[in-house]
Amino acid sequence: MDVPNLSRLPYRRPPLVRATDPQRMNWLWRLVCELAELRPTDVVEALHAAQIPVDLARARSWVVSDRDDNFFPLSIAELERNLRALLAVREVMRENEALLAATGATGAISVAAAEVSWPPPGMGAVPETA
Image (cartoon, rainbow, N blue to C red; front, side):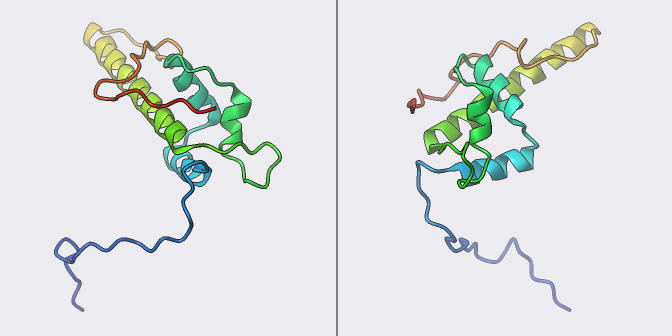
């Protein structure tokens, strides 16, 4: 049986299976959280490290079904900001772990203890949404 070389075939965009509303990106956020095994508490810690005020109820409201009473629509700007905050915290934690390894120290580093520069290098200001 001939197996095609997928690197040589032309790329095809998948069909659009839903209308995308930039003010309701919760479905995409849920997929990201599931893939990255993120909990709302992880997101709150990253946003707090970036000096972005948010409470756990709001972070939970982004991952529930739109039929849930606690649902709150997540905009594409919020989704990007959340991802950038999580990436910034991850980078700081990697740097801190490398520093600990270099000094021979051991121990866990919490997100709350990480100092995150906001916005991360190369990122312009992300518009805040209500």
